[in-house]
Image (cartoon, rainbow over all chains, first blue to last red; front, top):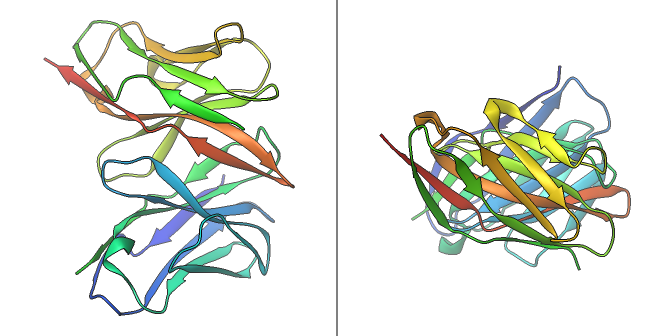
Length: 113
Length: 115
């Protein structure tokens, strides 16, 4: 069966410091991969998605970037964090297509102080 | 453009009573619709999905949802609420963009279950 792992689970970082959140998927090959952000009291916002190694699509302009160095690895990064980057970040995977189901990791809480 | 609207930001029920969480969608073609549940500080778990098969979809934990095209609705129901059902619920529509399906989330409904 497929599993998705995301880490770290919680992170407290000062403003201006770098960020790296990592996500890996097991039990499937060539998945679509996604990064979502959930700000406090709000719904989920799609940040990035990837349909293959090195292929990254950005949904919104922001202070973050994503990379996919391997088929089942998806990394969310920032060179300099802003206070507004605080939130709950969720990695997810899916098989593609309009009806594909997307499965989520456990999420990472980021607090920028 | 595709979108979803969850009509209630907060729903409170007593344990053992029915649950109704309302969702309306907007889609230019036959949509794929989902309900996800999120317990505090956790990731999202798929409850059920509709992909143009049976209009009444049964999910996990006793939840079900009915797709009504004439009303553009996909309401989530459960006959009898349990304390463990207290969580945030998201109605979601899938949008095809190139080769990938992206999910558009509603703003969420917080379900409170009182003893």
